[in-house]
Image 1 (cartoon, rainbow, N blue to C red):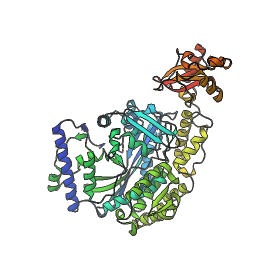
Image 2 (cartoon, rainbow, N blue to C red):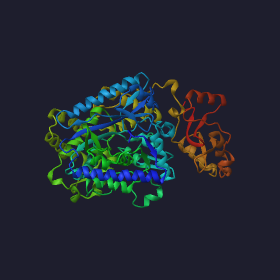
Image 3 (cartoon, rainbow, N blue to C red):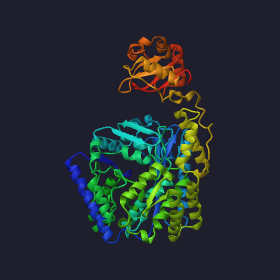
Image 4 (cartoon, rainbow, N blue to C red):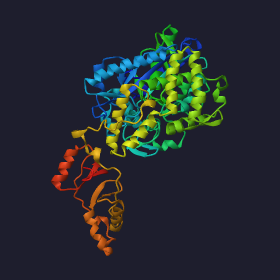
Length: 616
């Protein structure tokens, strides 16, 4: 879809024209399969490498269009967030050293991006979710100024007619109402493409679904979002919820999300997979069409199926079937969309080889898997892997088995077999699959992030801890060693914010508060129990309406008869507040000038934190 100039479907004539081309594309696809025109004798691989841009403080840098212009290479393209870019790799025929060649190709392109970025004070990070992201980075002001992103955002918002209600529960819990699809831009992935022939394509697609959970469990890299520890691969939950076109009331029926693992095995033809998606999801974009794809086929031309490609680009199954034309030959491929970007390019190529090896090493006894396994077990495996990573217990071939045992004892040997069967260099296979084995034996990307983030929180507030974590990811990636070798981080990295520190760096966000109708007795005891000297007063909408100081309540220790007074009667209401992104030195000056020991931090009128003399 990125190659197309798109427009919103507005009139009945637009819709009728688009649907006509879409249905013609389906007919043309069926004819190409029937006539044996689809390429069958060659397997290929290719990838989409998404990456984040950060500044010298390791915070998101909104300069994607500027950097894209400086790089000046058609392999690069935009993403919805202005702090992300994407590389579309060349394709490689499967065999011999194709994975090493892809690695060298991606590294060369990333080096080109790094060089252009360094001249603009930008650094490049490969990670599933950038740790230093904040909610502020996810508003519409951070959307890349490309028309198709605005159109998609508008269309999905119009379809929902209500805000996006994000709820993800892991070790911590994220509850967030958001007004755009921009939370999708927090997700950064390494999308892997495997071209296959039409013979057994549907069975191979079902196999891709069956192995998704175990493969993901070895590759998780996104446990943190906005400073909260959520799923091992939080992208899975976040992406699903952030572009859901369904209003909340629709969740009670069988209507499926555009981001989905699916509800059943595929049992029809290849074209039926596309037909199912067209039947479930309405199109909301169009582009200029000039030729009928069936007529093109009858005239000896190979159609690009632009209408079908456009529709396919607005649905997001975790394993997506794609049609393409390469060197004049039409082909079909499976796009694996659930693997995160990073932690290093070597880790990514290892993930790719692991997945392809299992895809090609499918044992005979697991052919026609849709007749042997319950799809709900496979779907459950996938979401459990997203939640728990390597700690997942899988339902596999009728038995429960740990991620470790399944990968080490069954899937890695299967991957070797599949790779050797298709002529992959034994040296390459051993090198990259050993990365997977070491990761399973030691540390995955998500485990490294969680362990080090927890350690940082012992000494730093979350915002600074997230910056230090991001700085360490950058340092480790620059060295190029796989994540299983990273070890504990350098806590000095990223500390030197100096004059760039903002209130968010030092504020307390885990705060106690009371309501105006609470009794003074309750407040007095809370302040004594928790040894706190400042108590904010909020209403039902979490808006700050007052503040109590210890001096306001301590006198009631000797006035038991007055303890039933309400907070409203003694709270201060004429308050100075600050924004979380105010420079720290400005906040300090404000406190000194006003002779204050505490400043509430608000987002608009909602209380989000406090800074006190102790924090300073």
